[in-house]
Every structure is written in structure tokens, then in C-alpha cells.
Image (cartoon, rainbow, N blue to C red; front, top):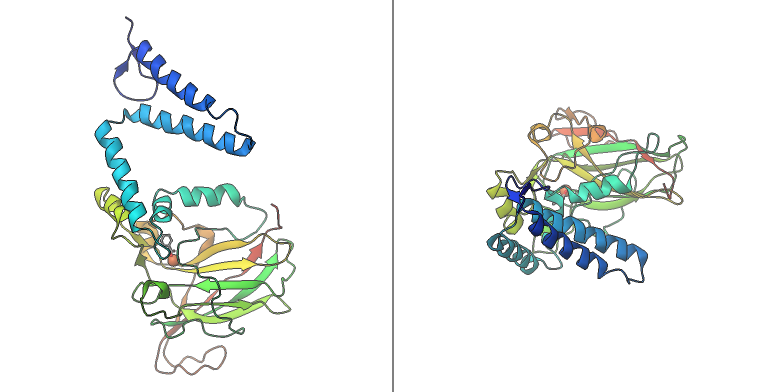
Length: 306
Ligand code: BEZ
Ligand code: FE
């Protein structure tokens, strides 16, 4: 019998008969989806089958490892409920969320880049006027955020709906507390000239939830659960592509160390200028006793369907 080097990087040798057995199984499973009426479902399942089998063959997955993987997914299922989504966390730390964002948000002109959605968005956050405060009692340094919303031709976009949400100074979103508070989130609309502004909190680094199987995986791989400091935005406007993004804080050491979900993009890193206590605020708000910060984020929306 002739032995050949395995084609899929095993480092060992796999004979042609064994390779044929394995390939035969791949082909049979792929063919089992041939009659799928929905062509897209057929494509996705056949491709998934090929990649999954190739993965198993490439790493020569042991039965003990297969069992461990099933146990991991079972644990992820058990910890998941309407507030905790371990599968999204898994997708995030594997970079699959950011790869899906990349595939679906091709750069168009100067359109603002998208990044990961994360699990902490909530529908029906309170509406605030332009210049209003999203903190709702959340602890942190006040931060004035201002900017414009335009399309890629530079035209102002009035009435864009801007959703913003962020963690407090202790690194928690309101929904992670059990007292039902609504804090660190709101929505507002750009004005007739596309301008917007609000008071938020200067973002600080925080860990993604890491008390479950995804956290165990990060420990086992010497990876940190910490995200670079950020403020989330989702911006929607008629005939324009919905933008889901964050802004990051220039100088945050976590940007260099690495963001646990690979969400940082250079264009989204913004200067947050620190202001001494007593510096007059843009809207006359009286925070004489406290330092505060300010930043600018000009948002450019791509055309819908691009
Ligand atoms: C977040 O930004 O809130 C987040 C993103 C991915 C995983 C966990 C949290
Ligand atoms: Fe976040």
C-alpha cells in the first residue's frame, strides 16, 4: 500500500484508502442536501459540511475532543437566556462577528466604518433632545459628544435616529444589573443641518461576560476578556445604510493590548479631550466640581443597498 502525506496538514501520513473513505463521507453528506428547495440554504449547508469535515480531518479530531466540544456547546446553551447570549459571545471572541460585519459592510467612499453590535443594545431606550444626557444616573466622567450626520456626498442628513449605549465606570451596562434601571443609553435625532450632540460618559475598558464557557476558553488560551473603551452607536435614516459602530478612545492602552472581540478600527479611534474642573461647558451645564471630556464624531452614512 502506498502512503501519501495527508493533504490537510496533519503532520502525519494518511493512506489513500483512508483518504478515500473520508472523502466519500463528505461527498455523501453534501449530496444529501442536493434536493433542498431553497438554493441559498442548500449553498450554506453544503459549504458548511465541507468546511466542518475539512476541519475535523485537518486537526485529526479525537473522539475525546469531539465530546469536549459538544460539552462546551451544551454549557453555552445552558447559560444562555433572554439576557445572556453565550453563542454571540463565542462568535465575537472567534472574530466571526467582525468577519460577518466586514462581509456585509464594504467600504463606500468616506462612509463611517461599522463594527460589532455586541449583546447590550435594548430597543425603546429613552428619547433625549439634542444636548440631552444619556447617563440616567450611571457613574462616570461626563463627556460631551458632538458631530454631524451626512451622506457620502456630504449632504446633511436631518432626522437620523441615533441610538447610543455604553457601560458605566464599573464596566457594566444597565441590563447587567438586576434592579431594572435604564442608564447609559438613549436615542436622539439629528437636527435640520444634520448636527447632533449629547452628554454621555467617558468610556472605560471593561471585560465581556467571562464567567461561562467562553470565559473558560479565554483562560485556557491566555487571552484577556477586556474590550477597548468604547461608546456604541446605531444610526438609521431613510434610504441610507444602517450603521452599527462604536467610537474608541485615543490613547487607551487596551487598543494596543488588543480588543477581546477584534472590534477596533483605526478610523473609529477618536480624541477625547480632557477638560479641567471649572472649564465652561458647551451648553452651560454646571459641573464646576468635576473634570469632563469632549469628543467629536462625524458620521457618514452609505447609500442603502450598498
Ligand atoms: C460590547 O461591546 O458591549 C460587547 C461586544 C461583544 C461581546 C460582549 C460585549
Ligand atoms: Fe460595549
